[in-house]
Length: 157
Image (cartoon, rainbow, N blue to C red; front, side, top):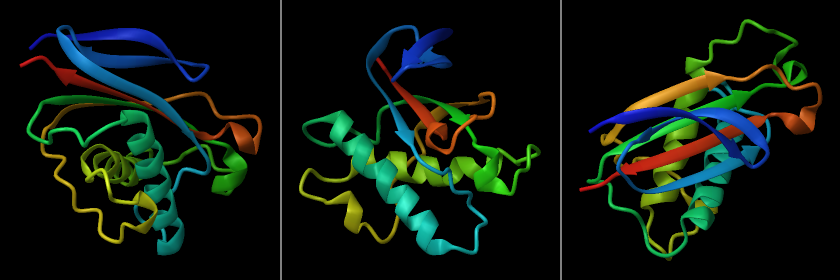
């Protein structure tokens, strides 16, 4: 499977994306809000962030759940507003990836009748997220500009 690196516009953000050259289908969306990391002591904030991502992904996917057995290339472009993170610019980006991937997997693979806002355990199979590309965008100037652009590419069978 051949991968491509391209620039795409995802809800107004110009971001680099890794995709399968023979992409069967894809999904792109931006989720705005304070990006929560995986080591926070505020588990309620982490749960709310995962649920938000799952809800927006499920809405964007439309129809039925996607097949966890397919091969996925995932691209995340994160834009942080320093004020939400103690005005630090030295954030460990990898700590912010897992909650996004947990919400993404739930949004793609939860059954159609599942309300993502009620998910308690984010144990959806993401083992076929075979390619992960993470890009940190320049920091946001305003709180409302923080968020993550998500691109999902599904390999043709």
